[in-house]
Length: 470
Image (cartoon, rainbow, N blue to C red; front, side, top):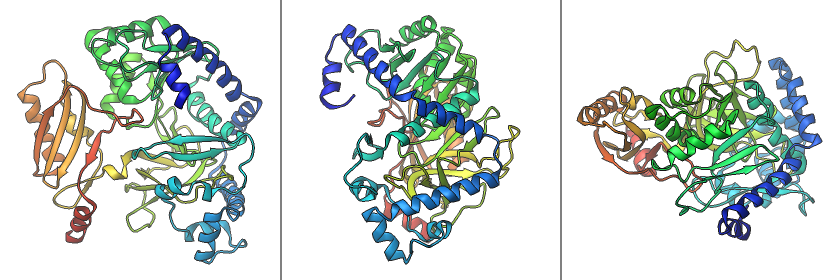
């Protein structure tokens, strides 16, 4: 829902909103779970036990088809000629010689990346504002859309032993009710999907008992959503003993899952988390198997992890995720800078036996990298909060090279001893810096509803100067 439709929906009475959600859910169910969807899920399962060599051959074939199509896009035609490539250049060699594709280029030249004009019938445009608020337009053919929907079913839900037919609840960015709605219900139900959409914008302390009562009554087998939103519920449930109904699996996405957050969610819902890593651009997908390791689905895209010089990072070393989608031949994204930071696992074997590349972890956003006075790059700060259990949520902000601010929403019992522990943990993590602790009532989300755990306010000039000194 968007624009006028969303305005009408949000200003309608709750019964009318519920009717609209039901109608939308029926349409969406028929569109999503089509014959193509089921066929693609079956194909994913057929490839489940492929060898690494088979996946490599598949990627090379798909890359060749992608490059052939890309020649028809105005942007790539120019880039290929400037780079000295020809249609006969082997795809792997061509890929290694191409420059990186920036998010800014995608935002401003989305149609220049298209390989067909006019746009074919049936194409849908997925929009994502990301962190800038400027919409990014991703063009999906019906076939591409079916593929994008089948991936998480086969490589996330099914790995956890559940599927789309299980009763589900979603805590995502969707605005299911007005921001100023004062009382429940803060959720709407789609009967066709057997899915409840729950608002993440009303998770205030006074509303949490209502959410948990709803979850006990609704009894979802599958819990999905932003991990930090789910953690607000989990912390309250564990602190009060007001637990939701047990679930079969929890599926998280879009935000980092810390050890403490994972422990909270798994204790509250009495089941395991299966985190996944993907994006609306659909040029990469990774998900946790039953052993907790992040397997990259090779059919979705080729992933490179590069250092600041654009060179491949050794396994175990953090770098920027650059992805080439292998399925979207209408709008190819070749060597696309995702803005994410990750590292390949040193140990590329897994007890599950799947021969898919393994990411050790997805660290966060490149733009959120912080820097220590001695020149180290620091991204994850979850160790700073170890030993402090009286925090609802927190955000680390680097104001300057020598000053960090920890903004936190305190839980009952937060005291001076906790402050001292946080400062000592920060010292162990980043060195001798000034650490200010600021208590706040809430930490604002991004426009997408996502939680931002780390914010670096250093200018590009300061960062470059630091690198030169070091």
